[in-house]
Length: 255
Image (tube, rainbow, N blue to C red; front, top):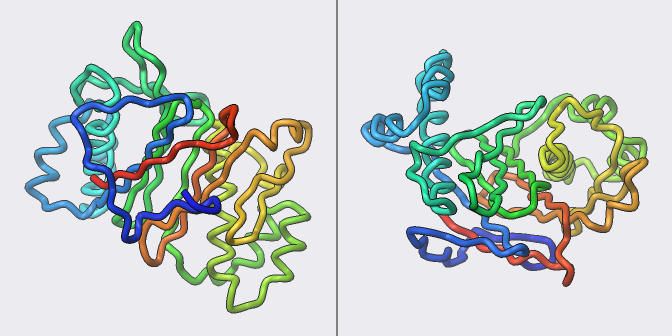
C-alpha cells in the first residue's frame, strides 16, 4: 500500500499457500476473475449450499447465473484457507441488512470478510476487524450523475462535486460512490443507511471518511484505500479499528 492506494497492476501477488493466518493488523485482498469456462462453473457449483443453488437458479440470464456460481464458490475456497473446513462445509449467517458473516467453528479466531463484484471482476477483503467493507464498480458514463449526487450525498460532498472539472467527473463519481458504499458495508448497514448522513473526501489520492455526525470521535479510527484492481474499474477498501501503530498490513492475491 502506498499513499492510501493498493495496486494489483504489475504487482507480483503472493503465492497462495494452502492455509493462511491473519494477524490483528492484516488485511488480505483477493482479486477474482469471474470469467471461468462453463465446465469449471459446473464443478464449482458442487461446493454451494442449497440456498445458494436456489439463488443461482433465480437468475434470468445464464451470464448472471454463471458469475454468481463462480463468485460464491471461489469465495468459499478462499475463506476455507482461514479455517480447518472444506469450502462446502462453510456456513454463513446474515444480519438484518443482509451482510454475510462466516460462522466460526468453536475455538477458532474470528475471520471477517466483505465482497463486491462488477461485471467479470470481484474483490474480497479478509481481516480480523468486523468493520471491513469493499466496493468495486466498472467506470462508465453516468448520465444523471448530478442528480445522484444531489440525492445521495452530503452537503459538503455536493459542494466539492461542483468544484470538479467536467472531464474529471467520471472518475470522481466512482471514487465518491465506492467510498460511500465501502463504508456502509463495513458498518453492516448497506443502503438502509442514509448516504447523506456522513461525508467522504473527493480527493482522488486521499480517500478518507471526514465526517460522521454523532460519531466523529470514531473518524480517526477509519482507513480508506483506493484499489487499483484493473483498467476501467474503481474500488475502495474501508476498515475501522485502526491498529495501534496506525497502519494495516495489506497483502494482495489473485485467484
